[in-house]
Length: 435
Ligand SMILES: *[C@@H]1O[C@H](CO)[C@@H](O)[C@H](O)[C@H]1NC(C)=O
Image (cartoon, rainbow, N blue to C red; front, side, top):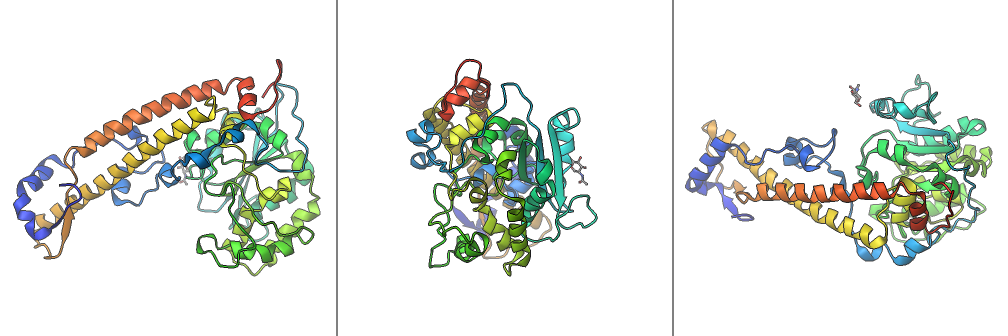
């Protein structure tokens, strides 16, 4: 019966089935949390049924093995890191690294997760501080001079304000704890990303995009020379013009690429490699440009890597990013790929379940309608979900989720070994070296 559309006029013929739903309610009442459909902040079943929710990993694209990882991505850590800067020097193993979490927030956003979830890491006893800029509140302790350019204005303001007292590592993020563009293997949770981020890797690279996934953004993304306007990338044809104003001495690159969404970490050394006046100049540009709030911020999304690594592209191996960057090590790229294949299959089932719930919800609505004694419109249509399919899907999803959890736990275990991290990042390691 699944997939077949039925005019409601025929509904009387299915009265037994309707009666069944009336008595039983919609079958399948496990909570979304139990199915791994989201953490504490995950969508409710009602939201899922309405289709209004956003399940982060459904929005991530399917793994395209060819694009996902190639052997050279694994063996040559610098394959897609063309920065002319020398590698930064890490401290002796076990040393502490001071860190500041810089958040771009608005008045309406709730950033209490920082104090609540990262309490054990926070100063004075821990290495972490925070700098939460509220863009639309001039009375906030930290706020930028103008509410324009989204996070770009905040990030530059922090650098300008803190230039002479920077921590070892500055972590630049948006204010929300969960976001689809956060790392899937860390439950798209900003807390986990901050907690697990390796300050050693940030120090070595100087600039590290916090997102490991290439899609969207890598291996090539914006082509500033493009003639035709690309509606999906509105900033593309603006970049060339903006570029000559932002970097008058640098030729316009043919391609700009890095993982999306403007969240990254930078070492003190790398921030200081650019004079403070340059950051002031960049921020002035945002304040003065005729581009909108939105577009002036978007322009920066694909030029941060140029500002901090002097290279137009920054697309490190995904597995190296997870392993060396966050201590989630699968051993090799085949295992890493397999994990994502399974995860993608599970997401397809989740999507199917969502559609099932939506259909079931439509029937619930119908019940309410007819219970009021109203007549159904002639042209109304209803689609019955396949009986029992939801239970099968829920079981299947739970099984796959358990398997994925097992594999992630093993990867986190493997990631505790500094030698493994070096191996998967393709860098030399000798006994006694730390992360
Ligand atoms: C902010 O979020 C926390 C959970 O992290 C919650 O306990 C608190 O009530 C929220 N505050 C507001 C004003 O919504």
